[in-house]
Image (cartoon, rainbow, N blue to C red; front, top):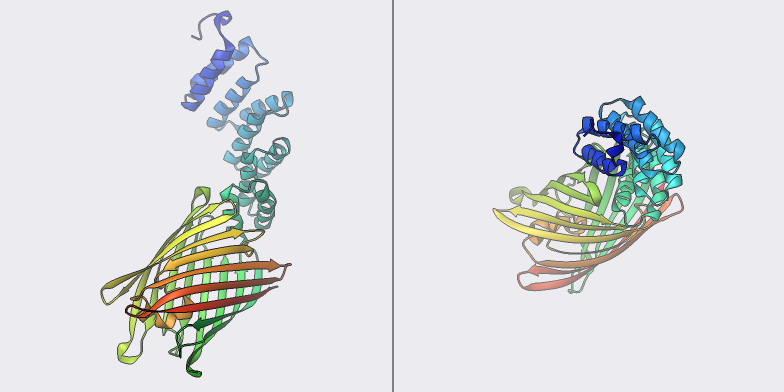
Length: 405
């Protein structure tokens, strides 16, 4: 074909062939096609894009830049030229130049989400955590259906440097005579840094029966979220108590992975020490969950497989959250079956409850007030089997107050 007279070459048709050669990664053929066309039509700028991609594939960055720059000088709003040039600078890890190009692309093509994604990538690669968070918080309302933005915001906000102190309190009432109420209160300190977070918690619980204190005591707990990389983080927890109102100990670990398009998964395990003296035993629970961001919503399905005396007792929880400005601002609905080792209110009864039926549903609202205060309110109804075929209704109210400094 290349030996034929240039008069017989249709440059428009040849352009389609050259792009096909690029897609097939036949860069030598694409180069020959582009140079043939430019010999006939030197102002046919699309062929400079072809050559730019050929040179980029060979790591001839300066030659590729020359081609892309030539196109943009002639046609300042040629979108593909900005895309290819940005990809070149990302490939070359020239983050400053990539940032400039994405800024220009955003200014010229404000509806093209591609440039916003690349700008966030540049912030990420430059380690500019606070700048990336601020950028995504500005961009996310422009693309409310783009799940990855909300997922990334929630992930990054947990890495910002902050310290919080908080109080939490739950009251559980029962419709069965002589049972309750139950009180659970906690004081916690949360230290968040780029590597993750460290949380210390002191909890107090009291169980009432017929107007008298049945059980009361303290639990000491430390937990941490550890950022492993941009797609993975871990959760670990250790709680100890010498009082019967709490489990003897609780050891927890979960590994979380963030996927593309707003998907995430959790795999983990729990060891809960229950009983006392000759009845002491350990319950192992396997944890598995999957979550999905859909715009500003987060959907999650989580299972707990509890093993006791060679028996398996499953529990399931489905959760929906709708986020506003930050990860602290959301409305939630949840429901489930069975008893999970992560339910703090009933943790001391885990050995009994996992073998009994439980049907629960709840609603919650959490809000960041100004820069320093967070509040949370949550209500849950639980239809709990307390002995075989006998059920009681439980009503739990929860209050959270935190101060960020």
